[in-house]
Length: 129
Image (tube, rainbow, N blue to C red; front, side):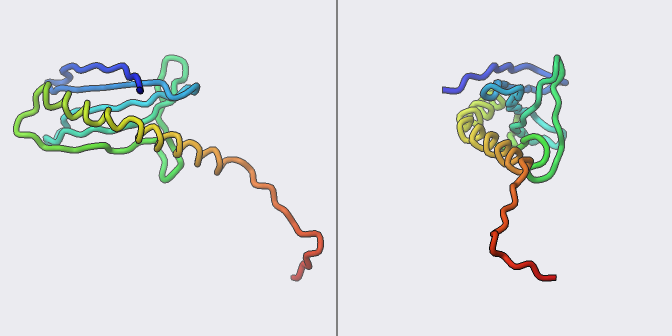
């Protein structure tokens, strides 16, 4: 079972849930956040941040470039309470294994793309110009 550190509190007048865990033996932290956005929709998002000293850093990129970030759930509720935020957050935490698989896959693809590929040439190949 995956263990998260979870905190639920009121921030700027809205309920906010955040769960974090370190990924494997790396300096990366998986963060899952559920909160009400300015448009009234409660969204849950998973993202990975690199820990550098006391800072958390996130690199924006397209495709496999940059750090992992993915939406998990978006719902509009009649009334946003601590219970609605914590229930949606718990629903998303239940998908943690799937998210971790996506995270590991994301960084494995990054690593594979960064590794140099050794070119091989057949000794009997003809070169034409």
